[in-house]
Length: 155
Image (cartoon, rainbow, N blue to C red; front, side, top):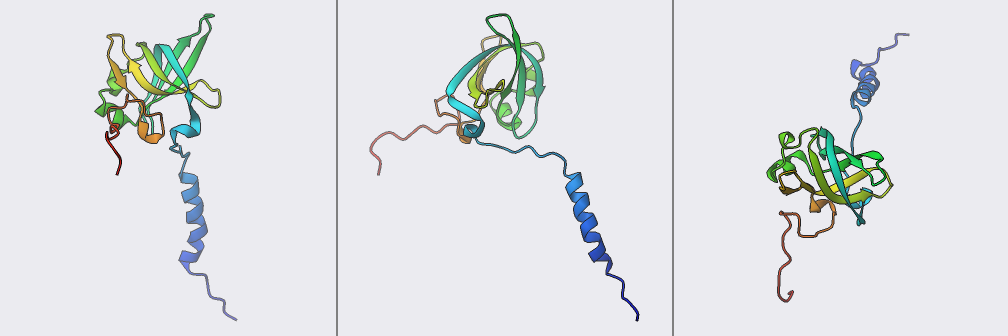
């Protein structure tokens, strides 16, 4: 008896699926502030910038912080999206390797040397907002995009 060959599309489905899965690469998930950072654990970091990652969904500034005992630590500070930072006056070119900065932010919940940055202060005294309250970070009036609460009786 004559057997009919499988249609081409049927044979390609498993191969196509495998190729798509393998080609996908790593995926970095976007997260809410409260999933990773502790609003009750503020931190102030001071030191030179060692690396800048201008990537989505968050830019990262790596900096070398010297502890009171002289030991050096490399911290990763998460900022807003590159687009948000640029609208706030921070560009890829304004954060140069070696620049001594001060970052006010919030520590990671898991104890790693990571922080969510709120403000970055440059050597010339300029302080710019580098975070985003929209992700669940504390609303403390620092975010220029925060809408003030309406005053007066609520309806």
